[in-house]
Amino acid sequence: MLVTQQPVLRRFWYALMPVSMLDAGPQPFTLLGERLVLFLGKKEGGNDGPVALADRCCHRTAQLSKGWVEDGTIVCGYHGWRYDGSGACVCIPQQAAGAPIPAGARTEAYRCQERYGYVWVCLGEPLQDIPTFEEDGDPAYRRIFQFYEQWRTSPLRFMENSFDNSHFSFVHKANFGMLDQPKPSSYRLEQTEWGFEAETVVPINNPPAGHRVTGTDKPTTIRHLFNRWHLPFVRRFGCTYPDSGLHHIIYNCATPIDDKRIQLVQWLYRNDNEASCSSEELIAWDAPITREDQEILEATDYDACVDTRRRVEFHMESDKPGLIMRKMLFELLQRHGEEEQFRPAGVPL
Ligand code: FES
Ligand code: CO
Image (cartoon, rainbow, N blue to C red):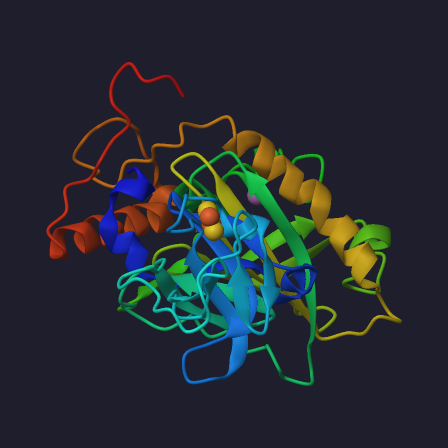
């Protein structure tokens, strides 16, 4: 499936960047192949907040992200035309005072809001709201922005991998995976209208110095995972450690930049505090695991096929979560009258 060629994917919300990045001025971001500019401006209705416009001036096409923000509007860096939060051109400095702005002088505006410290954008009429992160705002948890980086893979590959219990023993063998126990724990899976919930109990290697999860010197511990997938590309990794009562809850949005690249966003919620384990340590702990996943996913074909009748990949029992994703994405395309689009034969990876 080529994500930029499936219009229905434009009808979901995606996390684009920490809202704090906009303090430095307008920022470019490509979402589903669409070049956007994000800035803190006046929204329709007069409130301040993040705004997403097409990153293209209607005068001579310059990227508005090269400009700057003034009085809640964005000023094009080429000749100074200004746009408000609705995308309307509101000032042409070369014109005489009071002269009318030409009809239709505007750039496209998109739905944009702040949630969980990030700017979220939907390019079309949303089919559902931004998924709920229950821990966000709960005083029992602290929020850590763990990763924000580009990967050369597709969002479906990322989502599938995050529910694939068979890869731990191999991809993460240097870490928590147990190479001598390749048979994965199975999930209790429950499909919902918007995705699925997946629960499992997994034994893991637990070097106490690194994990800080048991407070004991046991060589292994167990993780209770209560995970969720939200159609199309958001997931929860709800990891709790019954031995210690510690919660290590991750949310990811695999934001599709184009067919070959995602912006990986990772939030971490922990029910401990900075004194017992600093944010830096927690980032450093998950970083090698994330690198291991990145390295193998960047070595796969970005075109992951959702029509499983096309036998381009073989499957096994533990691929079930990924197969549900493919089936639900396939049905989503069908409901919206779309054919799955593929990487044409002969086009190199
Ligand atoms: Fe933007 Fe001329 S290109 S003002
Ligand atoms: Co992994």
